[in-house]
Length: 402
Image 1 (cartoon, rainbow, N blue to C red):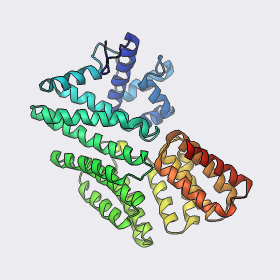
Image 2 (cartoon, rainbow, N blue to C red):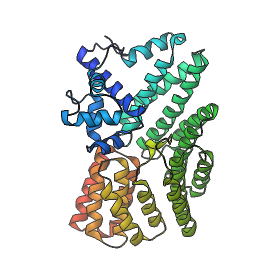
Image 3 (tube, rainbow, N blue to C red):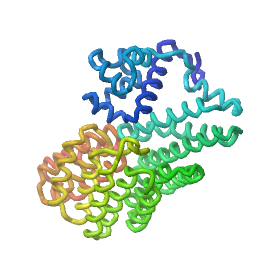
Image 4 (spheres, one colour):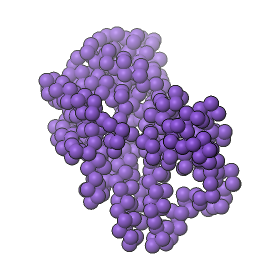
């Protein structure tokens, strides 16, 4: 069998690809992210990724399979079928055929493209964005081409939904890969996603892209007033569709107020966010975007912006203890924790947290974590001749060179 680039593949490689597609698809149909399924099973999220990527041929260990079957709502026999693979054509074969013959594009083609975008999106927080850019851009191009050339209304409608997801992810990747410098291109992709979502009349998809636009304003352009307008607009758009996105928008509204020095408004927004988050249900369309560590991460950041590192420190310590997944979010928390210590002149703790942040940034290359590490290094200048500070400087210089 040939893949999309005409590279021959063995039967074993096809089985691995099929296993990844079918197992991941079943997980998503039951409302699990890789992280939430890992938590339910008591394993590391990386274990789920290995099962679905085919890195481990044997799949889940025997003693985990009954519990996995229960989570996925399948019988033990059906789970074995999911893991064994079937005779479906590989994703690239179906999509490539549809690209050559747009009239043949159907809902199964759309499902394959959607699965590809979901797989890439799930890797965003743990993989370097540069490693995902090409595949995501290629997928977005395929979706846009098919949407412009298919005649079936339902297929075109579903392609719009995939376009909104892929364009949002592409905006995230471009901005992160540029170390949060390429604001214009990121905005272009987010605007593409918003347009697609509005045509769909999908407030959740629109809200997700709007929220990402607010990040560019807040953390890239350093325009808190613009960011505040975008977070408040997000809250309005998703008011009846997603408590997750409403809660996240309110958390970032709080951060915008903190950047503006408006502590009372900031703390009110944090309380409002908590109220929204308490109402999140399993049917929320954006459930995969929520993590229990987000309120602490944002509250800690807020108190740093408000110039209150003593209030930020315990919040960030608790959040850092909860986050052990070597994700881009973990790097941001550790970087902010380093700043909280440093602004209290607690040098040893600051350098320790900074080393841990660099550990994560070396693996993920996340632009947000990298920028905070650089900020901490600038604040360390008065101690640049201290040996332990010089050690972390050397690591950061190596990171910049790489």
